[in-house]
Length: 251
Image (cartoon, rainbow, N blue to C red; front, top):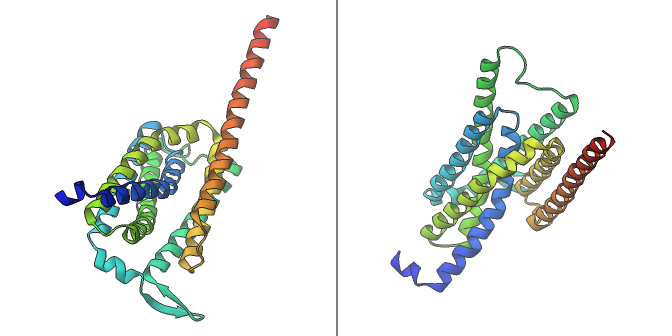
């Protein structure tokens, strides 16, 4: 352990792995932000904290079960001449869940439904909170599995992996609040985030069938679309300010 502190290779591996874990955590942050956007502010914050805590706990637990993790990559069934492992099944299931959930949310946005306004408000909010936390736990497990298998391929020391995950989770926690508030305050960005989740779900399913889509392409497309959306939000805000100033001038 002490030797790692003075090993340049260990520091290089930590920086590279931390950067990769932060990038992989973008998917997690987007999903959490979208899921909590329908909850009241207090419940949304609590659900976000629970989701990030579960993401961290799952990653650490999976790190300490490296032997089991490696067995997950071994084929357990062959379909049309292609070996399907336990990891592939989890990724395919998680990807399909993401696609289905994002599609359901897009439909709800188009229909302008608000599930929290029907019936007894406290009961509905409590039920929605429990449902959100359950869904966060399921998808956290999928993202954690993908993240840890990537970490195992990049580093050999458990201490470096844990340190990288801690750094990535701190960054995710710091980013999740602003991202969640931005998504909640700007409905058009929520639709964009849901489209991202469909794209991420398709990438997970493709990975499950050994068709690797370079994440760099996906994240570049997401970053470009997000930048365009930010420009649209700023432009819309400036237009509203100009209309307000004109209205005051006429008075």
